Structures are given as structure tokens and as C-alpha cells.
Length: 183
Image (cartoon, rainbow, N blue to C red; front, side, top):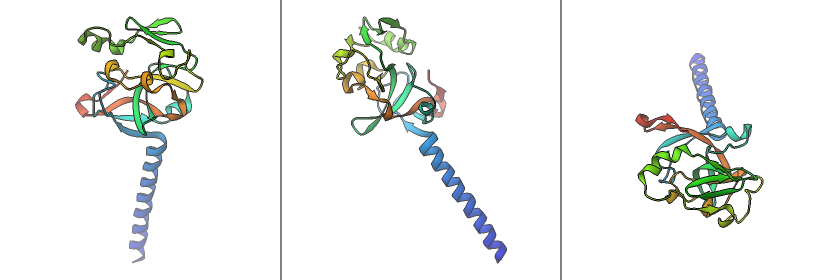
């Protein structure tokens, strides 16, 4: 009888440790996310399932063109690409991104640009967005979806505070046939 009680207790402890470990990983290290909508197409498809690395910004600052997940003003989580970092002047003209006056290539948009007529990204300056500032404020980011014609991003909601970032994402794990690392 005592042996059965000990065995039951050992199994219970193992199960409790496994649940606690899973909770720590889920809430502090990595979390699954489902892409909801078309704002990141063609890079990410609606209903793609991804892993969010929550440690990524505890270790270092965001980098330009990272894909991040953040808490948006509408009490919803958004997935977008970092375009502007603190202190950057952002401008689009002739479908080209300019950061601090320097033109940047966006190879992740090449495929999409071939499929549409006219510019993918309408011209704007940071001052013409809801942010209404000349440069991205300290502690904030300017983000955009890859589907520039149909993305609600910093052009509509303004810059986002870095403390709203959940983490960086780059791994699509589902659907399995489309699993890959996003660039």
C-alpha cells in the first residue's frame, strides 16, 4: 500500500513539474500566435501559426525589418514589420523607403510589387501620420505590414511604444507543408 502511495505521489510531482514548466515557457519565453488577417501577405498568410520569442527584446533592441508582435490600441495583438527606430526620419516616395534620407531596399516586397499595378506604398512622411512628429520618438517604433495597401499600421495608429512589444517572430510552424523561417 505504501509503495502505491509513493508511486502515485511521484507521478503527481512529475505532472505538476511538467505543467509548471510548460506555463513558465508559455508565459515568459515562447508563445504560439495565429496570423489573423492579410496585412502581412505575401510574407505571412492568414491563419499561419508562428512562435513568438518573448526573450528577444529582453536581450537586445529591436532591429529594422524585424517582424514583431505587439499589443495594439484596439486591445488586440498585431504582427508587423519594424520600419523605423527611435530617432529615425521615415519617408516613402516613389514606392521607396527612405530612413534619415537614405533609400532602403525591401526585398520581402519584391514578389508582391510584381503582382500589382501602381505603387504598393503611397507616399508619406512621418509628420503626415497620426504620430505627427519629425522623427520616431525615443522608446517607440514605426511599424508597417507587408501588404501595404491593406494594413492597419503606424500610418494609421501612430508609433508604438516598445513596452507594448510581446516579442519577435520568425518561425511559421503550421500549416506543416508551409513551415519555414521568415526573413
